[in-house]
Image 1: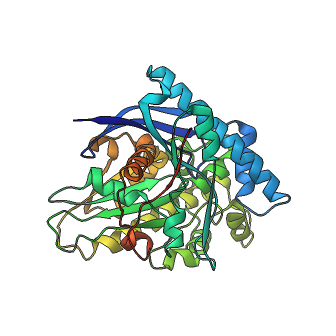
Image 2 (image 1 turned 90 degrees about the vertical axis):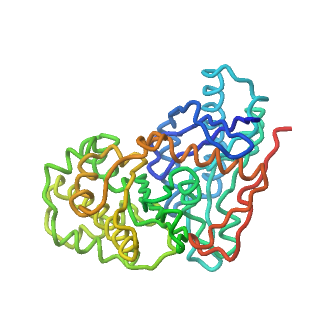
Length: 378
């Protein structure tokens, strides 16, 4: 059976690195991950990307420069992945490049979403065709433009007799609800539940100059501040009905600091514990509501994304959802750090094959469509 190579590339809302996955996909859509690579984003570019998530001065020039710089990073990462696997550019059918989201506002009239990482530049520097701009068509059809992952999760992680939830904890947390295939009401559902790692990462960077809280250890030393927790959870996003999506441009450090101003001095570790609890509670409440109407007696939850390494977070989820089995996607064959990179390789394959994808029940788009736009290298 004929196989083609695709590369998926993205940096998530955590902005910690560029993830690249080399994937082979055959004519029947069977997916096999061949290799994966985490590629450094220069500190100056990381800073520029964070600044672009909130209003600032001279934004168009700032955006234009960062758009090209990020594309150069993607191209360098792709070239490193090819060299490691002794592959030539012509052996890769396409790169699926998500880009870096700097603004995501589907609620505007009209809604819009912006991912930087010039696909023309990636194609020119690598000599490989690029599929990009995966979210814009969904937005144009009245959808949220996110999350896109539920389609892929159903493709590779669904089970014939068990209901499953795939919980991706990146900078933002999102879930996919996969009813077992024998369920006649097996409508695909998924949405962003709220902040994942983004606020916790920013807080520990400010206080300990660490990129993230390893295993949630610092959070575990603190105590949840009930007043701050209640204030965080009162944000209207958490009570909104899906379809819904959000990003780090909403749950910003400023969002947190504005709410901290209402309280006397809170110990930094207590703030970290409270942020972790905010992520956990918003996630578990969303899962509990989804599975409450299921006829299936047991639901399996599989975590992926950087937050899957946060043992404190997973332990709290296990306490709040004792009726569910908690595991990671490692057990399903795709390592937690590479699920989304493989997703965008698959989405590139879908575009190249002309696959019409149905996200109507996830994003609220008006009809199924082909996602992405094609940027040839020639």
